[in-house]
Structures are given as C-alpha cells and as structure tokens.
Image 1 (tube, chains in turn purple, blue):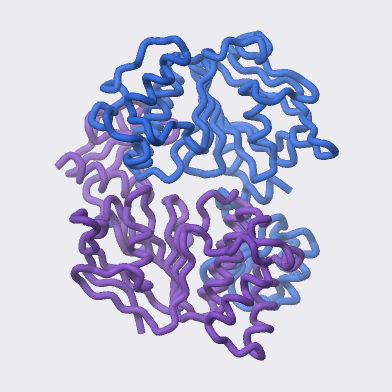
Image 2: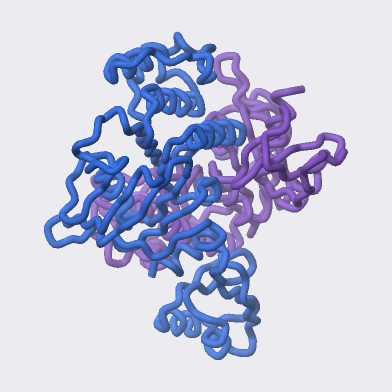
Length: 267
Length: 280
C-alpha cells in the first residue's frame, strides 16, 4: 500500500506552483520535502491532502489523512485540552476511545503541565507539538506536516522530531516539509524542490549518488559554479574534471541541491 | 582589532536573570555566531548590543566607546522580521533608509536588486526581501553588522548568495554578529558563542563546539521502564529512525540500564543533540 503524487502539476493564475512532481509515501516511513520560500512545499502538502487541485498527474491518499498547516492549526483561545477535544468532536470520535487517546497524546508531547493553558500562551515548540497531536488524533493512515519545525529552537526541534518518529512507528505514512536541508537526514526519503521543480529525490544517499560531476573545495571563488560554504568555497565540476588548486570532497545534500539549482539557473 | 566588546554583561528582568556575566568580542573582519535555545538570552544580548536596552551590569563597547555614546551609523541591523516597509517599493525603502542616515542612496545594481527596484517589498520573494534588508542595513557602511537568522527560509542559491554578501561585508572590515539556532547558519560563522541560561557555555569553531559531542544510539528491544530509568538518570531519550537516541548519558551508563536485548553504540551527536547536551 502506498500513496502520494505521480507527475503532478499545479498552476495558480497561469504560474506553475508545481511542475511534474512525483513522491511515494509508505506506511511507517517519513518523506521529507525540503525547499526555500516559493519552492512549492505548501502547495505539495495541500495537493496531497486534497486542498488544491492538480491540473495533471495522479494524487492518491488514504481515506483518513491528517494535516497540520504551516500556522500550526492551534486555536489560541482554547486550552490544550479543549483544542484536542474540539478536534475529537469534529471527527465525531467515540469519547470512550478518544479520551484515553487524548491523555496519551498529552503525555507523549510532554504537555501535561500545560494542559489547561490557552493556545496563544504556549511557546512555539509547545504549539507545534500540540498541532501535530491534533493532526494525529483521528489516527490517520497518512500524516502531512507543513513546516512543523520552522522557528523552533534546537531543543524543541529535537522533541518534535522524536514525536514525529513515534508517530511513524505506529505504522503511519508521514510527509514533513522543512526549509532546512540538514533535516532531510531525519526521514527515510527526501524530495528537494525549488520553484515548483524537483532538484533531488530518493534517499539522501541516492540523491547524493545521482549528482552529476564532482565537488571540489577551494580557498577562493572560482567561476560561475562556485559558492561559499562554511570556511571555504565549493566548486562544481559538471563533468568531474579536476580543478587545479582544489581538492575533491564528498558532497552532502546541501551541495547537491545547490548544484541542481545552479545547473538550472545557468544552462 | 576588536570592534565589539561585551564586558561582563548582565541583564535582569525583575527576578529573572536573562543575561548573566557574559563577555565576548567580535573583531573586524570576523563573523561570530550567537547560538542558544529560546530563553537562552540571545535576543536580550542583541538588544543591549544595539543600544536598545541598557544592561543591569557590565558594558558594551563599540570601537572602544560605550554603545550609548556611539553614532547610530556605526551599526547595521537586520531583524528577523526584516524591518522593511512592505507597501513601499525596494527603491523607496532604500531611499528612505539612506535619507534617515544622511547618506547617498546605494546602487541597486550592486545589491542585485535592479530588476525589482520598482516592485513593492510585499510582492517579492523572501530571498529578494532579505537581500533588500541587507542593502538597507549596509547603506551607511556600518562597522558592526547584527543579523538575526539572516538566511532563514531562503532557497539553496539565495542562501549561498546571501552568505557571500555577509562574508564580503566582513572582509571589507566590518564585525558581524549573527544570531541563529540553525546548523546551516552556524557553519558559516568563523566562531560561535553558545549560550544557555544567560551564560556562555561553549565557544570556538562549530566543529570545536559541536563536533566533540556524542549521543548513544539504541537499537533492538528497549523497555519503557529502561527509558524511564534513563530519563531519571538525567538522560533525554528520543525516538529516531529505527531506534532510539540517548543524549546526556555515557555508554557505560546506558548499557546496564538498556539491558542485553538492546544494542548501544556511541555516535556523533547531531547539531540539535549537541545543543541539548551542552545546554543542560
């Protein structure tokens, strides 16, 4: 059993927000969508859950799909408990089943002491964890989380990822979007988007292996395929020819997506 | 030469000590990262540095003078919200900033903004908005540049181009202080200062600060009792991929608790895990 999108394109006002994007989602697996502002992450999430229409391609999702929008979806004027209770009622869940489930989620997200606090009084990390708990309450087979870690500090981020992994362990398929390339390693597969197009896809190792050419490290800027990274410069050699005065390095995913974006910008 | 010098900075809010005896320097040409979880004291430190908030104790010197005596033109600042007027065009924003600082309007061409000069800031991409905010912060050629998560949310090329601008600014002699809690930004800094509870808990290159930290990876059968025991012993147990990660405890401590059905290995900590371990 798998879900996802196959060759999907989405157009807004004549502008392509997604161009022929494919992604497989499997139970118990986490797929990460990574990209910057305007990459198409939110459009992809919304298309998969059925909030946007594709002009072409196939979309498949299970009957029960949970979605956390970028804004977290938490109601500021309801308490933690009320937020969860409201979602349970919205889905018409049997209280005999949902009440213990809510308690379990409050515990798993470490919101026990904050259970009576209003949504707007929660820290960013608490609010995002509550948002994920609300999205997972109806026990969806597929859970789609749009930028759950944006703006969170490293400690909150780690707690949230732990909860996301727990959720996948229950056998759920997950799609998580992020603007940070280093978060891709937290999933089983990655899809890197830029301006609605696929820059890299597969497991992180696949995406790295699929990169054409080689990457060299240099002390200085060297031509159009060169960019600053950490303490020095990276140089991409499209056909792998060694670049004098540099040494070859093993690329990581951040290099791969930069190369793909460079190759597209300067054909 | 140190351009920014924070000496024994302390700031209290009622009974809360937000910054506690913090000292650091940022030299000309240097990019220093200020790292810390929410509540670590980063924002308070930056506000003191910008002269927006007086410290309870200690002082900040900019070029040897106390910050409240320094010409505002010495400092350039890009806040997280960017501080641009969304209803003005890019050119109008720059013209306004230049007029406020009493300096000539900078070239939009040099800033890579000529194509969007006449577009409203609210209508352009985040990468270009950040570029415009940089141009505004640099228009008066400040010797100190303070940046709050400067490349957050920008795509791969936009991010590398913004960092190139930041490094160029440093190379031209400015002292650059970057506040962040992302690895991708921290690794661009020459040096980082990690804060927790208002204090400096580590400083050095990112690899010095983060690279030495380790976590324990657990696979196989781990009982919930074992996890509770590890938590009580001061560890943080996290779900990860096909197993668990334990932060804050050594291999010798984890092995007897986890039992023989689990396999425990020491592995390099992720950026976030190192953060948790160092911030305790």
